[in-house]
Image (cartoon, rainbow, N blue to C red; front, side, top):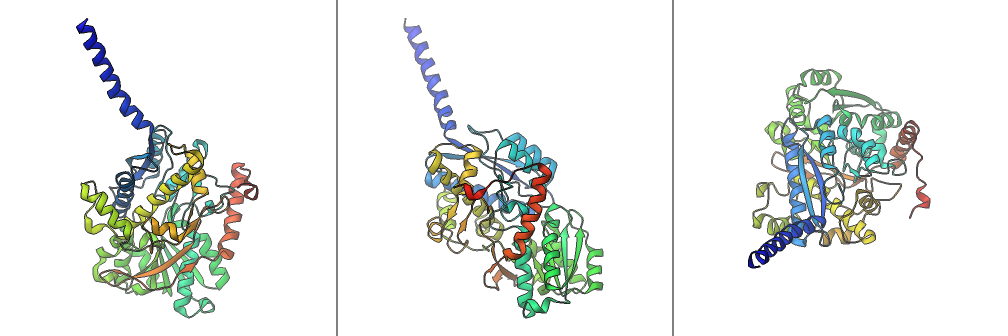
Length: 440
């Protein structure tokens, strides 16, 4: 009898030990992390990924998760390769009690490859500041969210700034503007918008492709020296950016006549070229290199507990901040969705509703510790971009300095392009666009 009682007690203890983790796992929201901590793009991929992880850990450590639902995540190395990105997505999309909440490819090439897959799987694909520019049209691209700015918005902002430096938009006529771009879906994205802008303003536009990974650019910059453009736009990533700046210096092209997209405007893009980078400019995806109250919270609740994953002096750098911003938008989309579906782990379809109803006011951004980093953002059925504001910063040899007021992309330029290209995509894929006017 004693032996039987002990056996039953042991069984009960075993069941309790098993039940508790199972219950805990049922109250978790899983988020796959497609990262590249190795390869030619690691110099930019690592700080971004660190910002994402630190913010998710902050929400867990400080808040106990999102309304009590813990965030879980798993990294998968893509090395910026599209095939590896697809493999990572397929491996991680079904994890967690409800599957992936959303996916951030951090690659326009992977975004193109996953767009139809995420539609079939009903998982939002988040491309903050990158991806398909036509996916701004939420009536066609129900699952794609190019938050904060597409490359067509970036192209318009860049030309606005160039026009301001030249003394007005009317001064663009007859000028030469070249685009040195990564020869991939990412680098090609701004070309249609720049072609429209060239026709509108009368400037000569020359696209100059650079083969992956971008360490060989001598012939391109010799051609630029021969063509003598009035301005060079840079759409690079990883080692390509620093190489472009060094090659520009080698042919004596003035760095203050170079303007990079926001993925060509972080510390790793300028420090390798040393003094040759001084004067180089880049767009900002709203935020820059800065510290706000959210960084103090990360240090207090994550790094003080030994759970931080980068050097403390890297907290607040441009790409680290971009990872933090991206993670925050995801968390707030989950929180928004919980207001409709309950404080529990949600499906990707439910989180998609959260993104499509995301409305972060200036007051809410201040509550979250992001005051000064972001302007308000509001996503709707029709507008999956939500905000299209940017500034310009310039490298002085030691730090980035903001040199412009805010620009807002002109939708009179970009919206016809969005409607045209997305309509062609819908026809090709036999997609019936939603009537957003009928959706609340």
